[in-house]
Length: 362
Image (cartoon, rainbow, N blue to C red; front, side, top):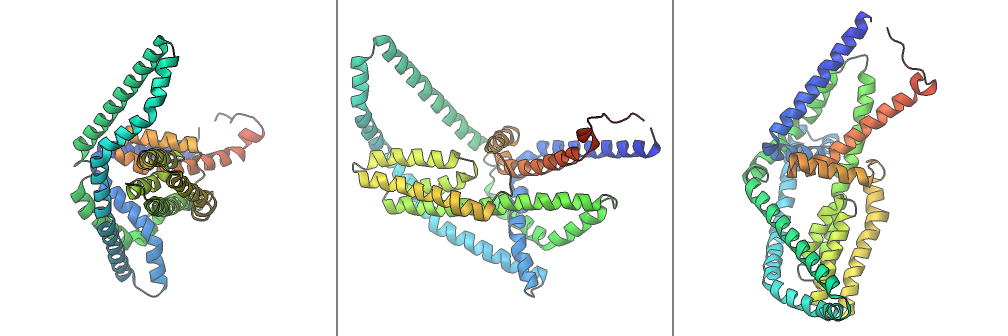
């Protein structure tokens, strides 16, 4: 084995150890990373706008200040408009929950009575046992979820850190973004710099397709569903619509969950078909816009993630890092997809694939 090969192997081993230590550190510090990850995501989202302001003749620091103030005003304005409305809908939903339950039982009780009269006793008992087990499991899951939120409320979703640390991180990253990219580029090994730049360019296109494109899709869908369900007259329509839009980054889960909740609310609130058909029409319009307008134009095929891989990434991220893992799961999965596709291209272009011959031992 030559000296160059030994050096290459030691370098690769060192990089692998450094990457493993980096991910171990992230895992150990996962409870405090949310404001920093949020700040990085916002800086990445806003950097193209800052670049455009620079190209228009504005210097970097004033551009960052103007952009930060404008973004803060938009967020505060939306909060002042939406938070009171959502709060009122949550209170009304809690107050009307007993009435909804009575209407729901009045709707299904004839079917339950028919089943009791026509099914054998053992099947009726099996249905009762199954319903009891499902209800117990649902209550247990809801209780565990609520306890988790309460237990991790200040560690994961710390309001003070989000409101204070995240803006500071965003501003500093926006100010120094181009400088950091230039410095990292200067550390690349010169012989492999073009290849590494090409990989990072592909990663940037993929992340831009998700972070910027998919985030814009979710916000547009939240506006469509929230506004549409409110116009139909569905109580808690704004709350359900915004939640459906924000959950749309999970393939099928957001739309199916929102549609199911909206239909249940519509059935217990309305006794006429026009309102129920209106709810169906809102989701039909939303799905049409998402499938044929928003996603093709804003995301396209740049992310290149299969829905199964998306679901696996979300579950894995949530299991390892909790709420933070859910937020970063898809960007990380997109980066892994870019690296895997690059490795496959190298393999398909190599002699090991074309000739089927194993590499010779030195």
